[in-house]
Amino acid sequence: MMTTSQERALRRLLKVGGKLQLPGFLSSITVHVECAEATTIGKDVAHVSITEGDFLVCHYQRLSARDLYPLVAERLDDLVMGGAA
Image 1 (tube, rainbow, N blue to C red):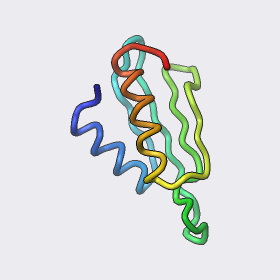
Image 2: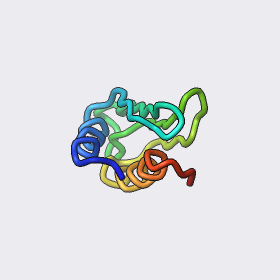
Image 3: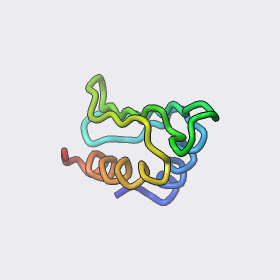
Image 4: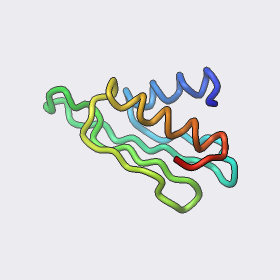
């Protein structure tokens, strides 16, 4: 399970974009978020990619942060605990 501070950092990351590194079971987990332009209506996140070490675990694109948070949080919970979804 992610800690409360990690969950808060993820929510903030989905709002402003950037990178977040979390400790993983085998190697560090990196979440990279690129925000969309302000002209895109209802789709405020352009790309989200989650990597573990050098391997791409999952990639999402063109979703709102509200729809995206549960998907990313569930995947990160699995990775932080050492399982693969």
